[in-house]
Amino acid sequence: MNASFLIRLKAFMVDYLLILAYLVVLFIINVFLFPGLQEFFKGSLVVAQFTGFLMVTLPVSLYFIISDSKIGGQSVGKRKSGIKVVRENGEAVPILRMVFRTILKFLPWELSHFLVYHLMYIGDEVPFTYSLIGGLVYALMFAYILTCIFTKKKQSLYDIFARTYVVKVQ
Image 1 (tube, helix red, strand yellow):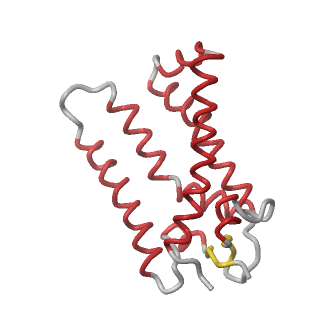
Image 2: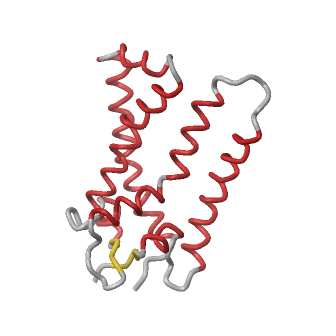
């Protein structure tokens, strides 16, 4: 049976607590143990964006790629909620397909990081392209939620493209 949006949200909130704990540890490391790391965020936008990607997006993405694929089976949140990600035939998801699914899943998150980095350094005029990117972030988020709620198999848009399903575990 396919997992509902609310069960998936519950699983993500549990996983997000782990992500939040990681971010707290990262903050402590950056502020108290290695304050020099903050310099990477003060220079070039490209360096700041890349540093943010390496410190936040990549580790979080790897958590979901490894834990939800054949390697891990389920993330902590999915295990606690009794759900898992599978292929069309019910088998575990290969790592490359999980990479694709995770890239699509976190695309709005990474686009919003891009906007934050760029909006910090502009004046009062927001370029039209930034408005479009911001609109895309919200459009993707709503599309992900609405497709998860209203599709017959309760697939989010990224699940449809990755040909994956989130199902309840027996």
